[in-house]
Every structure is written in C-alpha cells, then in structure tokens.
Image 1: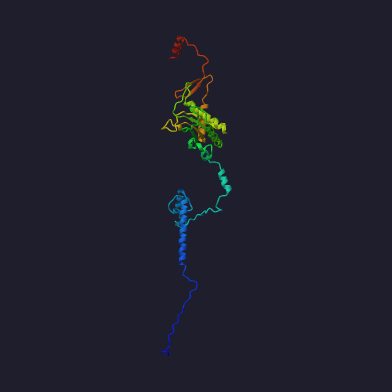
Image 2: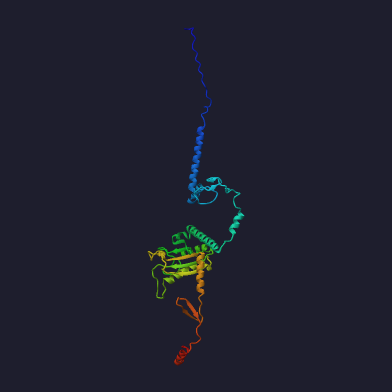
Length: 340
C-alpha cells in the first residue's frame, strides 16, 4: 500500500483582474432611448409654445415640402417627378439671405400705389393710434391713484366713430351736483387726467351729455336737454383747464335721455354720463362734409326764402315794390288779345 503511488490532482485557479469586459451593446440602446426621449420632449415643447396658425403652417410644410409657397396638399413636382427633390434653391434664412436694412427702409418709404391704398394705410395707422391710446388709458386707470378709485365709472371701447370714453354716474357717487351742471371735485380730477392723454393724439373729439329719464324742469323751461348740454360744456371747460388744446373739440352735444346706456332700467344712474369720443379720420371727414353742406346754404340778406316740394330751401330776390292791381277791363282786353 505504501508503495502505491498517490494520484496527483492539479487545480488551476484563474484570477480575473478588474471584473473583465461585459460588452457595451446596452449603452447603444440606452443612448438611442435618451435621444428619442429628448426629441419627443422637444416636439411637445414646440407644440406647446406655437399657436394654431403656426401648427397649421408646420403641417402644411410636411404635406407639401416644396420651395414654392402654396396651399396644395400634394407633393410638388421636382426634378425627378412628384415627390422628388426640388430644383429650386432653398433659402435657409442665413445672414447672406437676409435683406439689407437699406432695402427694408426703402420699401417702407415707398408711396402707396393708389389713393385707395393710401386711404387704407392712413386708416390702419389711425386705428393703431387709437388702440394704443386705449391701452395707455387702461394702464393709467389701473395705476393712477387719482383714477383707480373710479375705474368702474370709466368705460373705454372702440366704436365705428373712434375711441369712446364714458364717465358714468354711480349710486352715491355722481359726477355732477344733483340736477345741475357743476362738476364734483373728483370729476374735475378725472377730466384733467384724461386731458393729458387725449392731447397726445392729433384726433379731434366730440363731447356728449346724457341724462336718465327722470324729468328735470322748472318754470323757466329748463329741461334735461339743457341739462345734458350744460354738463357736456362743463366737461369741455374741465378738459381745457387740464391742458388739452381747445381747438381739438369738434362739437358739444346734449341728448337728454334719448340714448340710454341701460335701456332695461331707464332710471339707472349709469344712464347719467358724459361720453367723449376721440374721432377717427372717417368720422372727422364726415363731420367736415356736414359742416360744408350747412355752410353751402345761402343766408338771405334781403332775399326771400322758400321751400320747394322736396324740402330744399331756395333764395330769390324780393321785388322792389308790389305793382298795383290792373283795371279789370284792361286785364280782360289783354286776355282777349292773347287768345287765338
């Protein structure tokens, strides 16, 4: 037994240094996933910040990817047939493709091609000017210590005549003394603040006074017509005292209770108001035409004014003297002589 040789077992242990290499395929997949997620969130961000018109333009681009601007929903014909590459040069809006500033200025200075186009340009500029004035007034009303307490009594809107500024009465806070045309102290402050803004635009204004249906009268015949006119005139004086040029005022009108703000409640204090309209160019032109039409009617000095069948006024010379009645016999003879 001792002479038998023992079996020798050799065990070899392989030592791994640093963990070894496990492959990098997962890194490629992870990088693709991150890139896809980044692209997805960028698309979501672009869709979120773009408006409906921009999204429609993007959709139209992918439906019609041509260099020519159009609304066709089919691929444009390129050099290699429909859907192929276009033969036109694609402008990428780089610095070399941008128009020079001198060219832009020259195009802006070009006169309108026709009187109609010039009128449209002037109307658009006038509209933007009045809209900017409305925005400035709304901002001033919300920020001014003098106007902010009365923001619910100052109504601003754009009408076909221009920018309308209405100063309305409120329960327990009227703009005028009861039944009179004397301004309250805070009404004078409001009009003085408005005058500063109105004077910044070249447009003329009209001032209209309104009352509610509560009849005001006395033995002297003073009614709501006179009251509304006097209140409009008091507002005119306050605007001029606040710094507005006097020649900006085109007309003063008193309408009594004929144009109610709240027709459902004729006695509502909001119907007692002053309306200031900063007139646009079209309204000013209409007012000038009306004034010209009135000035064209001749004023007779020694003439006679008569009305025609259509209501138009005519002016004729008054006879120097009315002739005496002819004798009846001479009249009859003249008639017989003229008869056949």
